[in-house]
Amino acid sequence: MIMDDDADQRLLRRAGVLQQHWRRNLGGAAACAAAALIVSLFLPKVYRATTYILVSESKIGSGSRDAAWQQTAMLPTFVPFIDNDALISQTLKKYQLDRPPYDLTVGHFRRKNYLDIQIPKSTRLLELSVDFPDARLAADIVNDLAGRAVAFNDQMNATDTEATREFLEKQLAEATAHLREAAERRLKVQQEASIEDHEKDLNILLGEKDRLSLHLGQLQSELAQDESRSQSLQQSLIGEPRVLELKKSVTADPFLQKATDKLDPNGPPLSMTEESLNLTREEIQRNLVGAKANSAAERAGIQEGRERLKKVNGEITQLSARLALLRSEVEKADSDYSLASESVKSATRLYQDASVTVSSKSQDMKQIAPALVPERPIRPTIVLNTILGFLLGAFATGGLTVMLENYRELRRRETLPIEEVEHVRIPAGR
Image (cartoon, rainbow, N blue to C red; front, side, top):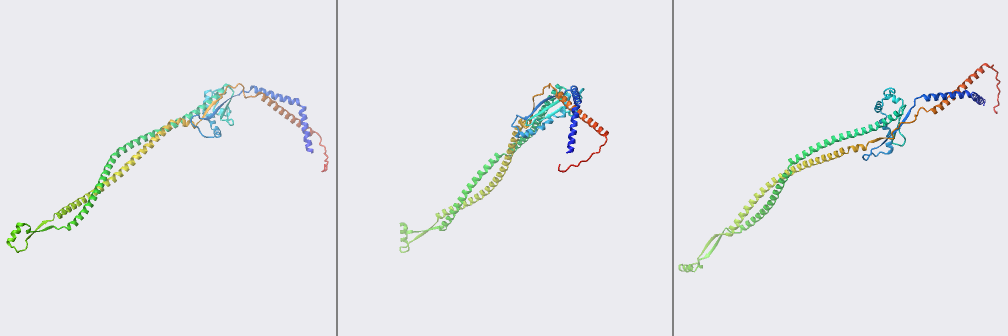
């Protein structure tokens, strides 16, 4: 309680001191304000020129499918397009700022914070500001930097497009060369294959096979018939005698009968026997010989036909295998040619669409609202500096007054005799 009372008393005394010397404090504050005013009047004026660059998707092609917030998040990527040592150096040389009286280098330009780049929230804009003592140069510098950034972006897009076109052109040339090789190989395979000639030979062999098969069938049928006929003839031949005997009575002839009666009227009747070949047996024999001869001829024809059919089947098998291999080679050559043709079409389409394809994946930079020559400087702010000088002067003068008063009070205490201070006990309940 006693300490709080002492602090309050000291505060009141200081406030009283400040009130007592208000003229001095007011004069000091006014002097500081006047000094700040004079200094502000003599400080070089700084002008600010501002322009904006819009970063947007390319209008060529379908564009990307990134969300808007992703594209906004990528905006800081484009800051180096502007805050670029090469571009700043070119601008300084263009306006001869690297010569007296400015003698600016890229390092000085950065250290003095002439250039400021901001990204306004929830926009696709880059805000460029240049603070410079010359209003016209400030506008020229910021516009030149913005123009160079846009041109640099366009140049990069054009370079990407050209590099892509060169790459695709190389791919197209390779695809065309591959197509030419595939076409030559296809023609060579077709010429060497002579599939039509082989197919004609195969058809001839197949026709001969059919004829042989039919002829063999006929021979086998005839052989069966001849063998059956031979067996039947042999059976018939067994029952036929080789010679036929014919007994003929002499008395059958009246003249012979009369002559016989004259010779021996009481004798037995006379007869004679005639033998002749069995014509039926001879016919059967001839037929049997013919049947056996036909059977032998048919067996020989069947054997020869089978050998020829076996040979024809072998030739057909070889020729069919050869044709299958040739067709496979021709189909492979046709497939390679088709693939090469599709590759050329695809490469041609990609080459023709290269500009659109690359541009659709790029980002455009456009300067909007070019900076105009500022009419008023942003620094120094004379009114603000004067007010701040007044407040600073008042604070400094008041502090000095309080310090002097404290010093005087301390000196007075040192000169006064030390009095014995009686300690008074205060009950705990109070």
